[in-house]
Length: 247
Length: 247
DNA sequence: CATGAATACTTGTATTTACAAGTTGGAATA
DNA sequence: TATTCCAACTTGTAAATACAAGTATTCATG
Image 1 (cartoon, each protein chain N blue to C red):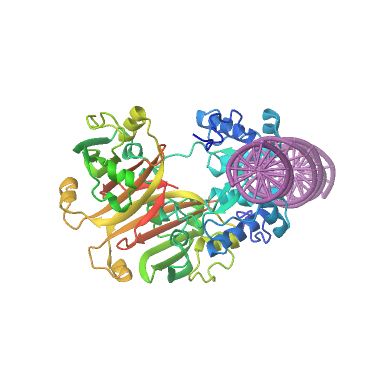
Image 2 (image 1 turned 60 degrees about the horizontal axis):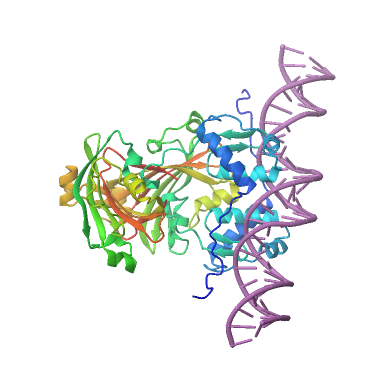
């Protein structure tokens, strides 16, 4: 009726800044094992030639990789690959994929992405905008070496993610999808940890008896978009795989 | 004998890169409250004029402040001060004291500091030097609002901490003591988290029934002294107080 | 008065150029 | 042969310039 929704924001960026593109490519190559740990990355000038950009652009990409721990730079020597930052275990980290590594992780979707109203958002309070817009709800069970280790519920505000619910997230990192397709990047967040005993559902998923202890993480994740938070609740069976992280 | 050490490197940098100087200054001003939360920082061009540098230099300083969460930048608007990154709870944290706050925390020593051999060091592997030197062992039960919440075991390599075992650590931050008396500062570390059920000892300390879930943290803490790590094992009853932290 | 267009800001991206500083390996020298 | 030194790399810092893109204010127009 009225012009309450002043900004439709339907269109989204189709182009990506060059430095981001270089960053994405190098990051992919590192996580995919094109470069191995200890390898020397091509020099900045070589990368300039490869990607047809200038040094400041390359350096911006390398700055970010360095900040995130993918590489270590040495003046006079070059940039040395450190591999995917395993340091950032799940505790100081974005998602399960980067914590565990893509190889050993299998994901099965319990509830495909669907629009829902927020149920209770795990003890974090929601803004009015978030409440009104509803959320995209996903439930996934994640297997490490074919053993169920994580059961996670993710809730994303239903704001401007065209065709998202149609996407196939099987064996993909949700955060990679968000970063690459919607330029939504995780900046940090808050998490709360407690120990519980597995309820019936978790007993079924994890294949554990009643009374089995489970770690529960509730997290509110900040993004590069003002006011957009991702909420997630992760249950972990720590029998064989403990949660690790650096600080 | 020979000139193996070609460069003594006694002298250190007296100059600081301009972008670092600008970063340090702005950061200081933010933490000191010269700029308040929500304030608009001077524009990049104004900062250029103030600090007599060019925009790329200013931007490098702002990039870092932005990465670390001191400011948020908005294209077309400016850089908004967010204040010092607050409240790191126990998960990204040095010790229990700073996580909970001194007011509500009471500590009772179960095992006073004593020299021991390492028992098993909680799944972290030890260096030869550490193994040979033994460790200082401490057990403490910590009460929040008079309820037992943390039981922690701390192990410090027995290297050059004169009169340490005689110290009274009741209601003190162990890390404060180490910093003030031995100049040992915590730099970071690695931690592993799992859920267990309370054993008899924990049942007694926490006053919980058998089968009660408990969070266990194993941590290896880096210090400013090369090769010196502090190992600690913390058990948490998360019934009333969950563990929280930022990342 | 209300609407919308122009414009004067803001930050974002990218190039070009220059030099400083650390590392490495090979050539000249003792 | 062993040492020293230099040249050719590497990354680090900094400036000057240009334009793109987002925001907010101003001003002319209906």
